[in-house]
Image 1 (cartoon, rainbow, N blue to C red):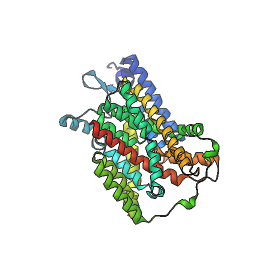
Image 2: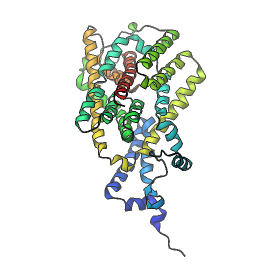
Image 3: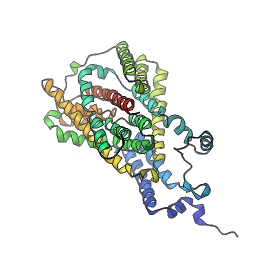
Image 4: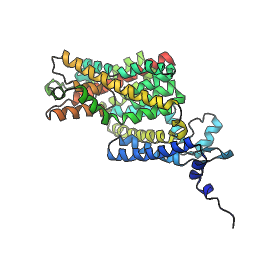
Length: 401
């Protein structure tokens, strides 16, 4: 009977034993971290739409390391560096996620699909309630996106890398993906992972920032619902089309994102039910699912052990913290200029994690005063935050690419 090598059969264990101690530790940590993401996503502590597929991909890819040709180690899930046509055709036949990565992820298409889906579920009328105030708050909430750039450069990153990680302050995952692909392709995987990891924490972390900076009396300010005007579908569509054309004219480098977002809004307002159902369902949730899964699969030990990852983690949380502070400052400014009738908690919604930060603002206001309703104004600031993030991303890409 031939001798059977147990480790050859169970190659995941064999590659773990044969690896460098640092790689061993990293793989074990990432497997456990992936399992934790699934648990926390299912529990609702983290964003389940991203964290459940991301956690499954992360734990699986770090467990399923095997010996490939020439005794080199790797996985058959994905090859993010495949670029030669013959090489690409080979991996497309083997790696089941490779076509999705190659044709939607590595070119930024998946970001556009997510943006289109967000547009379909977004009511532009909220932005039209008070567009100047909402846009002012959104600009203040880009403070982290602006200030993190010089901080990152001072800490040793290149201008392009600094701009890519600074975009985490905009709290817009597809925007971070798009910008990092344009400016720092070698780091787009860890930057995007950092972005989505932290965006999932905004729901848990920003309430403490609100309570720290805004006293309960001000958090409970009730907005007058009679101030909310009504807009026809035609008015909303006209507004969306004009704003889209203007933004594309001024900043064509971000035109794919602008067009995707506003196209979703126009489809929503046009009432074409088959398109609305398709984009708000299969397109949005399918893109989000595969985005999370691909991020998890790309999160191998070798990627995370890049010396710059720790720096990216620090800069990402710094960007989000400064943006949150900037948004609340903007909320205070509008509060004072409005004769103290504007709830400053709305400022946090300027950080464009749609609709998470708007929901956080409403929850904190409701906890302070059960009669406080600020969600329409918070959603207005939220939508403006998407636009300002795209504007700043376009400026960074135009100047640095």
